[in-house]
Length: 318
Image 1 (cartoon, rainbow, N blue to C red):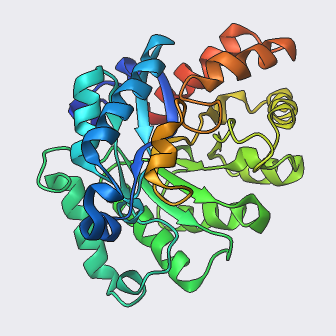
Image 2 (image 1 turned 45 degrees about the vertical axis):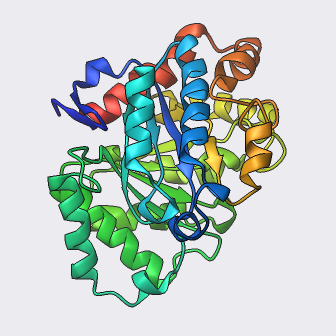
């Protein structure tokens, strides 16, 4: 059993995770935009205050740990994440790895060089801090497994294996490439019990979802607040019930995939004018809105706790 997990403020035991949101974001704000426009694009002081307030809301409903899924080229800000954890007391686990953009500084680079960069984060800490990543992140977008995406999947898996870290992979269910993604990661030596195929809850296709789960990995039911954008809440409930009836309760995570400041859907001022994170949703949406619907559908409080407590602990313990 793995004895420790890296959070942005130090190591904890799996038993200390408590109620865990397995896929959220503090800040996704492009660094080239930030360096060019500064606080006009991303005012760190205002974003920090908003993040402390929003994460504080999660703490009031019992959340003790958040996994921040912000990859390096998605605008990860380790200093901001650490400040939020320090000021709220909520444990935050940071990610390392690259998102789905087919950028020239990834496509044109030697894979060994990129691997060395990721290895340095895992062994020395992120951006001059002693905060080490607690999970690896990779992504496959709407174009499916392009040559670059395959290279990034293999790279991320190698670094995860070398550093005894689990891995989360963003994927678009419309591509139906989930099984291929998982098999690629397994071919690089990963154990399926260390893999999460993210955003799987966007699909209600039970044969597709079971084809992924049959490979032994976890899936993320992690976009509940976006009702109608990727899937509806009620369809998510029905699909979750069907998967649990098939025996997969132990391998599903519930989360929101919300971001305190997401710098590519709207302006900073539009974000800050909303008291929530997305329409009427914040990091408490699962507790306020989803849990009553799950109980109405026949789930129990113990089931809800299992998704948010026992499953993360088992995942990080392996």
